Length: 146
Image (cartoon, rainbow, N blue to C red; front, side, top):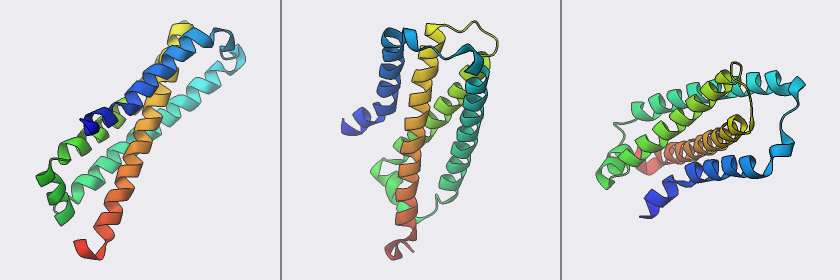
């Protein structure tokens, strides 16, 4: 139950952030002169995060034969690891897509609420993957695993 609940963290905080923006930040819409810069920068960030996470997935899967990876599989954590990576890749890709779509749609409170929610979700998902990846590399580099 605890693992399942923990996996909802980025999603729940992303939804909460988007809703908070919708209800409380109507007066704080981005300045018209800065919208293109904001969307361009967020499109770049979303694309870079997606590429980094896809590369992370390849790196983690390339060490699949290691003893600790077999232990993760036997303990049932490999599905969690794949889910964490997939969630982060999809979130970063969705953030890049919504940033690109923003160039072509009229931008209102609903758009910026979705944008803020996806920004928080993709950022937190990315941080979770990085944290897990550092832990995996620390275990892989320990003398007991070699």
